[in-house]
Amino acid sequence: MSDFNTTDVFNPPTFILLGIPGLERDHIWISIPFCTMYIITILGNFIIIFIVKMEPSLHTPMYYFLCMLAITDLVLSTSTLPKMLSIFWFNSREIDFSACLTQLYFIHGFFLIESGIFVAMAFDRYVAICDPLRHSTILTNTLVAKTGLAMVLRGGMLALPYPFLVKRCLYYRTNIIPQPYCEHITMVKLACTDIRISSYYGLFVVFTVMVPDALFMAVSYTQILRAIFNQPTKNARIKTFGTCSSHLFSILAFYLTALFSTLIHRFGQSVPRHSQVLIASVCALLAPMLNPVIYGVRTKQMQGKLLQLICHRRV
Image 1 (cartoon, rainbow, N blue to C red):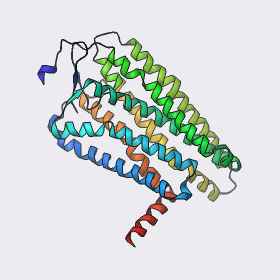
Image 2: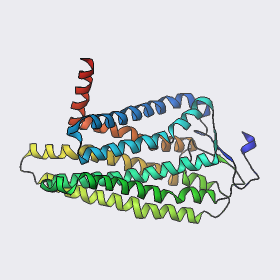
Image 3: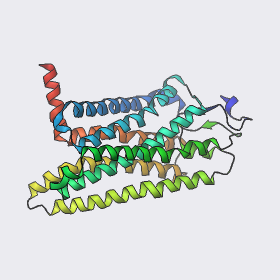
């Protein structure tokens, strides 16, 4: 592996993913929770998609958006976990430069798509609770489809510059990536050229996409909570809150893990390197695993249909 420490080429044909630096001897043990998270993510999100597809009563905007979220989570986890597990299990650390750029694009693109889907789901819950009589006329199937397409195009287009910004950098000092997956900020830090454009673009995406998305959801849930507290009885308030609690918990899981991972990367100099990478890797995989769990536990319709399908199969 020392042969890859330095390289005379500006754009090396391959990169080396170290996994969890400093914990190489424990990679097999570390792989156990990561593999478990991946299995839960795959099974949970496929079950959600299957249940919604098979049950006509769930063919509503809320569950259409939930299926979009499940597909996004599947792509996000699959773009990172298989390679991570191959590093942990088989010490397969080498990754082609183009494959690294592809992985980077999928990570950032589908992260932005997921944020957009959460915004769409927040709007759905806002209309359902604050203006229920117009919900079916506002959120038609056509609007849901157009919204989903818009979120995909937004995420895909905004993530497109990331691989090009990485590709234009010169890597003649090292091609070793000190983590188990390719990420924009980590790769540009390896470059030997000016990375200000990459940094500015990263900030541009944060302040034009992530911050407005978070503000929109905060405003939506402020209005939703106000409507809930205006309900005449305690039972009505609990029932109304139950219709949006799953979405609220998923938003918190998504943004809190993303924020924590960002803070660890940028301000965690006092934290050991292996702890930084391990925490950031867990945070990246936590939300896709938690979303189907949250909706399975908190949504009675999903619980009922799942139990109904299981009982039907047994009979």
